[in-house]
Amino acid sequence: MNLELIYAEIVRGNAELVRIREALEARPFASGAPAAKPASSFPKSDEVPMPTEVIADAGNVQVHFGKNKGVALSSLGERSVAWYAQEPEPRLGNNGKPFPPRPEDVLLRNAARTIIHQKRGTLPSAAAPAASTDDEPISF
Image 1 (cartoon, rainbow, N blue to C red):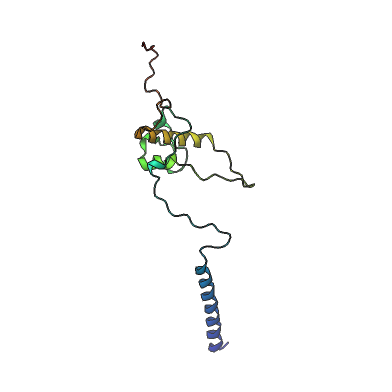
Image 2 (tube, rainbow, N blue to C red; image 1 turned 30 degrees about the vertical axis):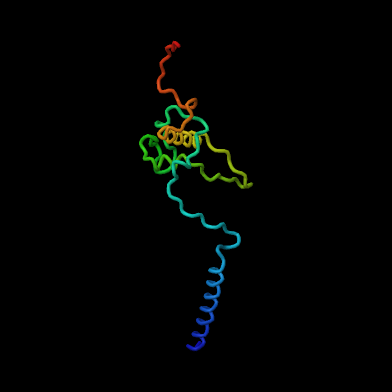
């Protein structure tokens, strides 16, 4: 092959790459791919849902996965606790239906939510766990 043919092949290939790049830039995303989610900072305390069940000793609940595995929630910072309090993306089975949440995930999520809402003072008074365990009757 001489140099002129090689140069012509390179120019043709480059032109095709330019057309592909232009076509990709014209569309926000590929037809089957979802749009990219904006990167979110840690969740705001206002966005933390109420616990479905108030956990009495929420600070002693330990994380059961990830880099904080075995660490009690009371030992973590506010940002970490707020992250564990958020509702995760559902895990989908092969049929496309979500798996039910695991009990340890629900416990951790409710404990984190309990801690946040206790600190904010936004737990309903009937739902707040009892601070004392005195069995003495209260006279009115």
